[in-house]
Length: 484
Image 1 (spheres, rainbow, N blue to C red):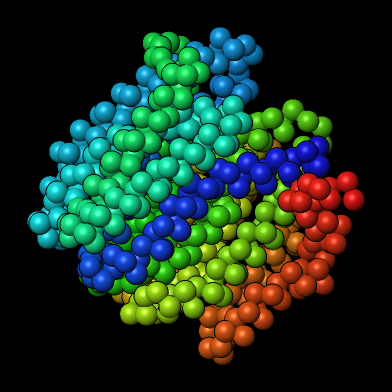
Image 2: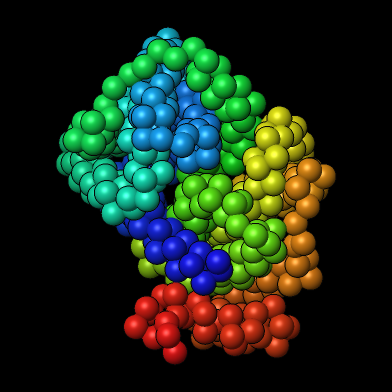
């Protein structure tokens, strides 16, 4: 099973991550283009808008993708039942997206006042509403493509949105000088076009329909709604520090912190988010196989090692990238390792909580996330006034570590998996130590290169991975040599 699973997860993760990776890469590439136009305060306002949009999407999403995958992949036995699941999900999405968009229009003005943002930024916050509507609605075709294992079509839609959005953002911010408004307008138009493309694919597949099925709705919402508070708690863990930084130090500090955080966030685009997208559909099928729990454990260790390597490389060379493109933001480089490894821990959390989903114990997810979110919030309130934006970086990493530990312990109560704790811990700690050594050690490119290159040999010495496992991974990436 692992020989089939590894190539599939790697290939699908790569394609699923194309859109997200491109979006995050565009965010980095565009920084030296629009930062001189926006300034630190303008970039801080953009960070606050993104945080607000993220929270709104989580609330409007109703955690429906998780319910959709369960009923589409595990509960449905015929094509007709799968069509009914898609149609019911579509109706729920249309209603939820419309209501959320209207609420955002009503709350935009009070939000601007409450954050202490200049009133001239109100139009930019109003544009959050259409982005929210289209991106939420677009989750239906994207979820269908994932469930049908059509990663190429999924990648085309996400790729197209990123390309169009980047072009429109440059026009709005740099050419038309609209400030943060130009950025969100470009994102709104790209979201609308991407949603139209997704709906067209559903139409071609004869799946573009709505269905009123009260019984199925109750079942799906009963499974997914307990996950909504968990998503909100996840937002608190991830983005609430922007609001606290805004209150304590102002938009400029938010801008500096957000740049370093965004560089670290690239790990989410290139490794964590693509993997979790593929994993969310794969583990339901894996659950039918024999000895699946041991396979889960191997996936966890492999993920931790590979993701930590990516986070280490990103942390080591983030310094050089920031100095090259935005030298006035050099202090942001110290944030990168904490952001990158926080997302590695988020991936660990995603795998660790697989048991709660399989055992239908999703009601525990809001509690575990709430514990981590409260811990992170308290740390932010304590550390940000003392250390500034680095306090937010410290609390982010600590919060995600707490999340992985608490949620993993809860999952083990209902679905025990023989996790390889020693190898898992060594992979994570070794990567973080080398990342911090690269940033805090001698300020030389050669030193940072040595820190990055040393990771794999040290993993071999510590027996976290073996040459045989590396050969399997290489064969999965290079099919021509898979037989060898």
